[in-house]
Amino acid sequence: MIERLTVAAPLIALVLWVLYAVRRRSPLEPSILLLGTTALVGVFFPIGAALVKPLTWRHGAHLPNEVVLATQWQFLAFAAGVALIVARVRWRRVDSTPSRAPAPQDAQPSTALRDLVVSGGLVIGGGLLYALYVHKVGLGPLLDRHNFAEKYRVSSGLGALYFGLNLVIVGCLWAESSAFTGRMRRAFRAVAAAVLVWSFAFVAVRTYAVALFLGYLYIACRRSEFSLSRIRPWVVVVLLVGYVGVESYAMLRGAWRGSLVEAMQTLEREQRGLDRSLGQVIGGSELSHPFLTAMELREFEEAGALGGSSYVGALLGMLPLSLYPDRPPTPAQDFARRHYPALEARGGGTAFSIVGEAWWNFGSVLGPFAIGLLLAALLLHLERTADARPTGIIAHLLPYFVHMVLLVHRGSSVSVAKHLFSILMPIALLLSLAHILWRGLGHRPSPVVTFRDLRPALSLSRSAP
Image (cartoon, rainbow, N blue to C red; front, side, top):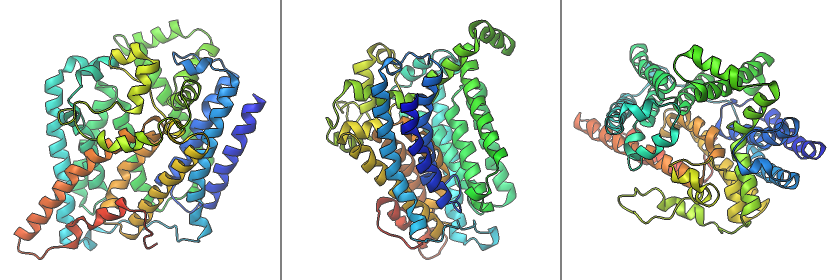
């Protein structure tokens, strides 16, 4: 316990110091959120497992203490790379006050047309794709709360259709961050509410609800200029209660048989003793799995063995199987096949780890530090671009990116690249449609609907503060 606290203490101290240095920024800025989640993932399992025996099916729960300590150092190195970039806002004395969203009367006609075409097109097009996905898969597997591996199996080859609901979420958040009238915003909010109900009450997929909640909260923080310095203890308490609720929901979902009362009775029979309940929370938490994966990679694989190939393969991984049937497996798939073949054969998988992937590609300490540095630099650049151009494409996409940052620790470079590609392609088509419509109305080409807004996302060159 003392050894784990010795490594966890500098990680926590580093994160707290940086957060204080950038206390004028919103707590949901992607770079700040990346730093905070790194601290949570890097501390939760090693400290929790030292207090309570974790109950999990993962191999990492039974590895020796030396592996736990070594993995903690990898997370500390990753956090140091992120902190070095995030703290630069303070060191360079950049104006860190986010720009307010434009008032409806200040919106340019071309901007309003662009936002209407993009948000409406994403909601309608994404909804049609997802409806086709539901038709092909059937309600039976979708509404099954117990066999999640079966959901993944029947969804094989239907990725483009399955992603339709994510496009609906992007469209709702795009509309919320636009200068629409109250009536139009309420229409998109009604769609978002329907997605929320569907994700919780029917398909039991929390990711959709998390994306919507964080996206709307991010927009609210920017409009009110809510910053880290305004966070009060009660806010922290609410967040902790919310996390406990999420974990409780996961346990309830696993025990759901019949009615809600029967599910509660099942939990009461199965959860015998506080230690067992806490052990299941620590072993099965979303915060634990990325750390467990990083531990297992360190124990069973060789540091630097990939030599950066997984990041190069992220480009090929964006191609659909119909175009590239022989594409190599992603590092997450390769990891599952090597260490959890029975689970992978049933269509399941394990949460991966960006820290573990960095270690697997570029070696110990230096690999996680470099990837943390590059990822934070990209996120900070996007934030500054959104501040400089509050009506631009990047400013409209950041609300959705927030949930991607929250989940990035349990993913890989391939999954992130595929996700971004699936979002940007339909948006690019809708931007082109908006441009054609604007020209068709007899107006000159407007710079608001060109692809100049996408250039900052493809470059790390310095933008105006």
